[in-house]
Amino acid sequence: MKLNVAIVGRPNVGKSTLFNRLVGKKLALVDDRPGVTRDRRESEARLGDITLNIIDTAGLEVAEEDALETRMRLQTEEAIALADVVLFMMDARAGITPMDEHFAALVRKAGKPTILLANKSEGRASDAGYYEAFSLGLGEPVPLSAEHGIGMADLYEVLVKFDDAKRASLGLPIGAEDEELLEEDDGPLVDVEIEEDDESETPLYDPTKPLRVAIVGRPNAGKSTLINQLIGQDRLLTGPEAGITRDSISVNWEFRGRKFKLFDTAGMRRKARVQEKLEKLSVSDALRSIQFAEVVVVTLDVTKPFEKQDLQIADLIEREGRAIVIALNKWDLVENPQETLADLREKATRLLPQMRNVPLIPISGLTGKNMDRLMQSILDIYEIWNRRISTAKLNRWLDGATQGHPPPAVGGRRIKIRYATQIKTRPPTFVVMCSRPDDLPESYARYLLNDLRDSFNIPAVPVRMLMRKGDNPYAAKAAKRKIQ
Image: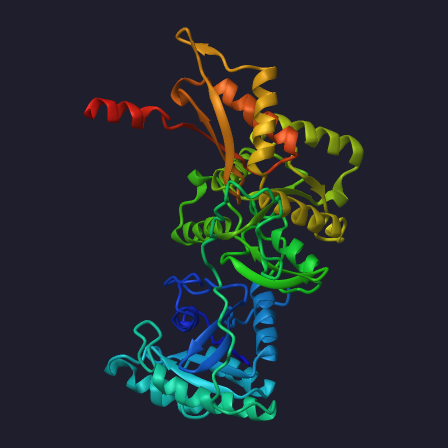
């Protein structure tokens, strides 16, 4: 059982710092300027023996109806509605402001159990602000310092009462430990080692675990709109403004019985244009999502497709070894769909030669066009990414490939190619043993790689082929004779 806890308050009072403290990782972006957080972010956390589903929210601000700040506030209000307990945070050093009073009234109106937190309470400079906090009418404030970890024991003492109350209402034993372990929110992928003598081609992955899918692209390509359309709710902040998303937000979802963890990321501009510290942090967070994803969906604005930055993003994904699907977003704006799609396929073949036959899926995040087709492409490419080929089949292929096109002679001596084996998946990685790997022309290695892709139907996903020199079978005998 998890206690749903939302952290709310005006901008720059330390909500994201407390979120990171409770989660035990620096998941949320933190900066001195106000208004860094925009979307609400959820993660599992532990405080003592309490299991929490903690929700970080945007700072509550007063703004006009159509403003971005208003849409941010609606996301925060949604988080309050989902919470079992609200942590209302104020800055004890700054004291109570009119904005604190305004939003304290909003929280009281919501009728949710609320704990008042007087953050930044380290040192005597916070004493006056702590006593002012009583005037908000939210009960006795809990003094703490999210940055330094002060006051966590006091926060536990208050939260445990709500945890016990929720357990009692559900008929669960009070104070019992949950049997299930917390799932890691962001952890490294583990490459699977392949045994050479296994003839099976069954993919080595667990279909019960959530499939990690990162949605990436340039600013304003429609990434957040796409995720909202997939999950069927306005979970992520969207709008006409470019660069709304800052944090990489994970969303749990299920499609046809398969669990997914979707990662919305900040738009990535050209490196030369990224000057501000906050945007650098956002881009770093997006790059981290790519590294921990299994499938990456590159979202292209079909009105401006395959710009230089799109190609650089795709090349980065290939170098990271991730499976890739290209979503051609805003397809509802295209006037000649068939001609446009044929032209884009030709461009993809020419501009992305390292990703042969990459799936190009025309979609519309606004209307929901081809959402099922996009998800099926993700599942198909994920299966290919996890595919392994038996050593016997690989060597039958290698015999045919080398007989049809023998390796060249270099320096008057022909290079001997002995055998091939797959050493791992995710991405598929093969080792080809040959007599002089350093002398093998790159063009011949590329021929083998392309023929392997065609023979075993491995499109789009990155494939690694390593040339290695095999051990000399007579080396041991020669050394023995030398000793004698």
